[in-house]
Image (cartoon, rainbow, N blue to C red; front, side):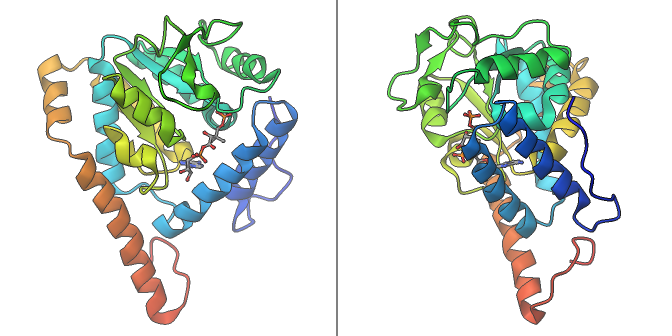
Length: 265
Ligand code: PTJ
């Protein structure tokens, strides 16, 4: 396991620094692609504007995501470098709570990365990991990156796929294949956020523990009760709420040009 940061917990940005250091160290272990650092920086910028808090509409999306995974016949959680570095334990817990399979699926399939991510998942308690050891032999049509290769026992046949921090090209490909797509993305304008069926606009670090506890809470509910949750949800409204939260926060900040902590704003 990676050591935590040397920065004092009293530093005003201690948590953010701790996450950055974790990601940086995982570049060395090959779990994280270098581009993963850039992707994280983009996410951080949106999180700053959002207020670094889980919004009420993100909470609704989290409940809907849990219900969608629990209703699925063959749910699969797609794991990339960033999410393996940040929340491998929660992915394993979510997989156990919902019966979803874990599949490593990478945008940057560089030598050694699949194995490094599999090791992190196994260390976190995963018993089965798809998409590794040359098992990603199926293809998603019209996806123009390494993400097109998927495991024929996993994403290829899944009815629901959880693809946090995903690129839009494959999200579109999965939707074209008739799958329901659930994502976590701090950018409500990204193609993935726009094309997914359920978009949780939140930091994956905050969203994952909540998603695990929602799945635990809902797993004994009837299919009818779960369907009601899914049917009453509108992803368009969730995206609109996320954009409004950002706009309103920026509106307040811009009145005085002073940064407000989220609780003040
Ligand atoms: O490990 P690999 O090779 O599969 O590559 C993973 C990355 C993330 C590098 C790859 O999928 C990629 O380049 O993704 P994008 O196209 O940059 O999209 C990532 C999205 O996730 C962006 O919209 C970011 O704003 C968002 N994001 C970044 N960090 C977080 C986040 N959303 C939620 N929580 C975060 N911590």
